[in-house]
Length: 244
Image (cartoon, rainbow, N blue to C red; front, side, top):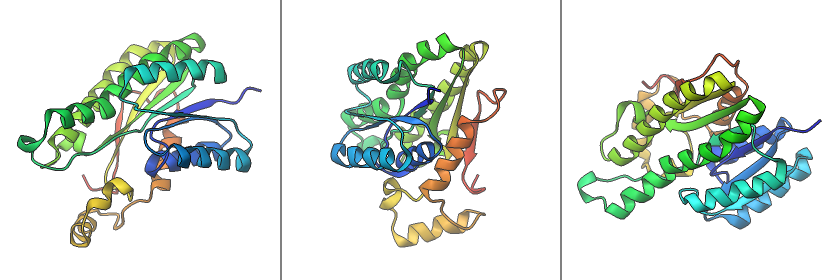
């Protein structure tokens, strides 16, 4: 029996890396992407192949570049026709006043965090339509729901992810394809390594669960979303320890 294929963007570290491990552990073949950590990603993919006897395909490049995504899906067609599960995880952050943000930084953030999702969905959907099934899960943030000072651009991009999730779910539900988003709070990743000890303690004091979740806990949640009943679609679900 052909194994299902999951595409996980931004898989060299953090939530994407933990999610790839979770899917591999459960027998999925994987397509993994990164931009800057090619050697690290290939070594990780080889480890998953050896440990779980799955097949992997690594695609390294700028996920915000439409042409890279188009070429990646040509490779995916040779690897296994198409993807059954798409996890749009890749993202970058920008912390600072909007008035001091350059146009180039704005475009880079939008292309990585939002345009990449458009491109990956566009090329993943035809295969899902052909088999009348598929799961698309977009990694979002609480900031896309509530906004954050000094992260206006990031909040705007994630707000766009949330709106895209809800609208696309309505387009695809009649074809048996589910689209949902996970709005994460603070997860213990390199991206959140910018916090000082006092800032981290302040965050901890605001999270009712009393801890900052490790990436593997976020990964388990994404895996559960990917295997949720078909009736769950068009939802943006917070995963934040009760923070908001």
